[in-house]
Image 1 (tube, rainbow, N blue to C red):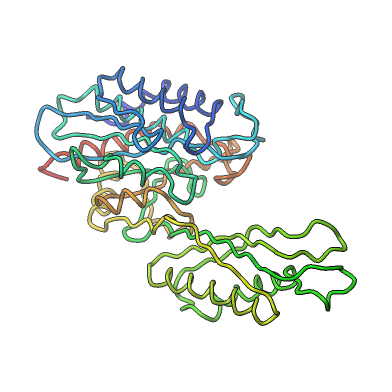
Image 2: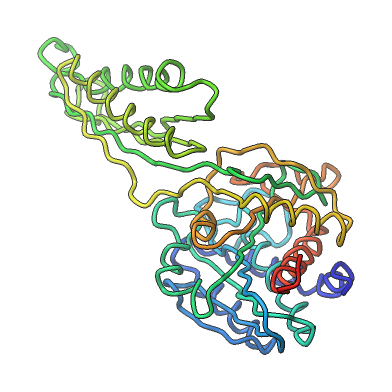
Length: 395
C-alpha cells in the first residue's frame, strides 16, 4: 500500500475536519461535540464504536479478516483555556478556548488513518483500536487513566500502542522520536504558607507570609542547583503566587503553585521530598508554617519502548521516505505515558514549522498555527504503524 498516496486522497477531508474542530474547541472533560463527530465518522467507515469510554472518550475497533496482533492508535481531543489571537480564517468561535496545542490536528489525522485502514481492511492482519482520548491537558488524572480503567486497552488486549504530537520545534515534514525517556513526569504542587497578618506599618508584630514566600521561591532553586545530581534533567518552576488584598495589609497566608519535571523515578521522588522539606524548613525559620500538596495521579515519564522505537524509525524512513530525527528529551509531560505503561509502543513528534506560512509559534501560544500540509504525513505514519505491527510476521 502507498500510504502517502492514500493519505493524500484523504487530505481534503482531514483539513475540513481539522478546521471545523478548530472553530469549536472544547475543554478537558467537555469534549461532547468532538466525541460525537469522531464516533459518527468512525461508524460511517464501518468501524465498531464504543462511546463514553472513561467519560467522553471514544474507541473504534477495526478487525481484519486474518488473525494478528492488536495495535492502539491514540489522538487527544481537548483544547486549552486561551483566547486565540492567530489570523487564520477558521479561528475559534468559543470565547476563551483555543486548540493551541494541535489536538484538532491529531483527531483529524487519526480519522484519516482510520479511513485508510478501513478502505484496506481486507489486507489487515489483526485488529486496530482507535483511541480518542479526552482531557490530556488536565495534567492530573487526565483522560488516559479513566479510559484504561474503563477497559480501553482490553477486550481485545492491546499489544502495541502509538501516538504522535504536532510541534513547531521541528520543521514541516520532519518526524522525531527517541527510545527510552522522551517526555518528563509532571508533578504539580501547591504550597500554602501560613503566617500572621496585621498592619503593613508594623511588620514586627506579624509573621509575613509574602516575605516567607519570597525566600521559599529562592531557596527552591537550590533543589536543582545543590541538592540533586546536576547531570539529571530536572526543572522546578513556581508559576503562580497569590496573597493579600490591599497595599497596607500583611495577609495571613500566601499560596504558591508550580511544577516539577523529571525524567526518571529516583530523581522524581527525591525532588518531591526536597521541595516539601525546603518549603517547610524555610517557613519555620521565619516563624511561619507551610502545607505542601502534590497533585494526585500526575503524569509519569513518557517512556518509548527501545526495540519498538527502533523499528518505528526504520519503518518511517523506509516506507514513507520520511526525515526521521533523534529527538532530544523534552520536559513537557504527556498523558500518553499512561498507555505506554500498559503496552509497549512509541510516541513521536510531527514537525510543523514553516516560516513562509508563519507557523513558528510554540504550542500553547495564542498565535499557534499549523502547516496543514503535514496532516497527510501524520495520517500515513499512523496507518503504516498499525498495518506493520498488527502483522504477526513483522515488522
